Image (cartoon, rainbow, N blue to C red):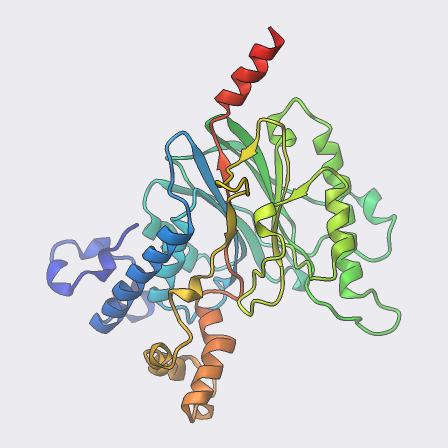
Length: 385
């Protein structure tokens, strides 16, 4: 991580060129005051402690930490502060590969994140999905090149016309899913990042419900993947991971079954865990269809290692004292600041809108992959001799 912007001005007389958080609209002035820096450093230390407590360490030639995170309208929400970009980058740096949904057309904040992460971090980006339903969204994979290699496989899933003509609900997936191949140690695999149709409404008479639209998206997606998965020789097809903001609600078991019936298993470490900021829905999921040598790390109780990282336990904490630190910023960013007339209204606005617009309305989900399969491989070969 690159923390140069958190240094005092007195230390930057000769290397101001190395700063990232500069305001292009104001003659490239520094965007962080000393008070901003102090608050960010204190909170970063708390966040780092939370990451150390909740996320496993990166172990050379042993493990790989894979995550997925919908970062709300990343590029469209222009009031994100440098402070929040530091928190986002710090969380990303805890993993080896992170699949990001809702990256918008404007990449200025995204590029700041990449610079904060440092030169070892690389990324792939899809183009934005055109049209109103696409919401100007693109998908990204950010990865630590010291720990994982992009295999060269990269693309988007577009539904063929013959499949679309067989059903009346969709003309195409609303956000075009993106896939990429990666290699680390013994593991070679592909990841498909999705952002499925949201909502749980009926949408009125003679119209498909949100659930029906989402179900049809999954049906079509699975049909396309079936062809790819027939190529069992290619490890990137044999080891396939579907993840992202699936928008699968608690009553969407029939949609989950469409995926699991094709040999995918939902990550055990995420089962039943809420992944949105309100902690009432299981939107973000990870499904795996992998070979016998592709193993997830298990703990001492033989449970898969993974989970949901609730960053709001460490930054933008819901206490009156913490919220008071952001009163001035909330007044500056709110369209109608005159409505913030009491501590209770500040608290409500902070939790319902402001912290979600600074970070996200989704929490990162993750799992730990075992990258050294040599013991199992050798045992298997010995048994055949």
